[in-house]
Length: 347
Image 1: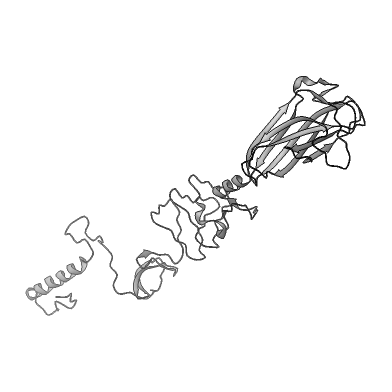
Image 2: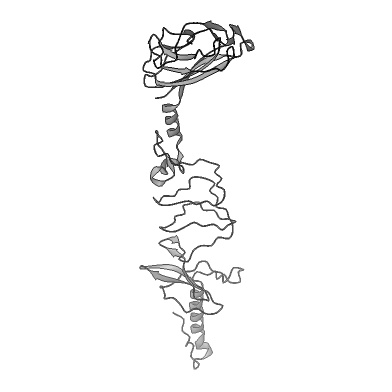
């Protein structure tokens, strides 16, 4: 029978009361053993096995020094809630997951084996002296306008994966031509390699000599293009370009002296048997028999993948030119060297 507080009645004799007393004790035991340990004389007697809430209730009235834990209806489902003495109500579960409608404060070290999902507009914020550490896997900002702001130092012991954080999200740029010229973006390894491959140095060839030589063939300093029949040839250098569209940067260093002050020396660069010079430099020296140096650079499209030879010729209006020396004699033991350097650059 169910517990009946009105039994036994005061008029019932002690003998007749015994069955009713035993029935009420049995009813009490049945009620107390619900979700409780009720071993007679056991050390665990009275302890909860579990807590089962009955039908959901409305928010109770808070009271001083009281804490309420209860089930409350949320969208047709009973969810666990807590009410403190100040009337602050917190929903603790939602759809089978832990839930906090008022935020979560973690004061010690915590381990999360699953995922932490922030809703739209939500932030993961550490204090000025706190650390947020990700030991494994990835840290992803998925929103198109999401930002990760680090005011201090960002130490990364693993890899930063740029595959989902490129141009559209404002982080890494994957541009082979580096067209954006952005000052606040990082280029991907592939785009850097592609750009270097497309614009970098392909090969460098050089000739350098400190040998002395002389010449007297006239090459006038006037308003005509120097011709390959003028002056004397002092240096040559051949190159075989790898692409006709690549660029050639030709640098000439020419050490010389002259026997006549006003002879107006000219140094010119020629290619193969082409009559007209590609480039030329005039020079003026205040004194005769003084070592001087002419330096110039010519930049051009290769135009061929066959071997091509560049030649440096020089001459004056009169007198004798000494290459790498003075008065037909070598100076500085041959280390006063002249040179041609040709650099092929990706076009």
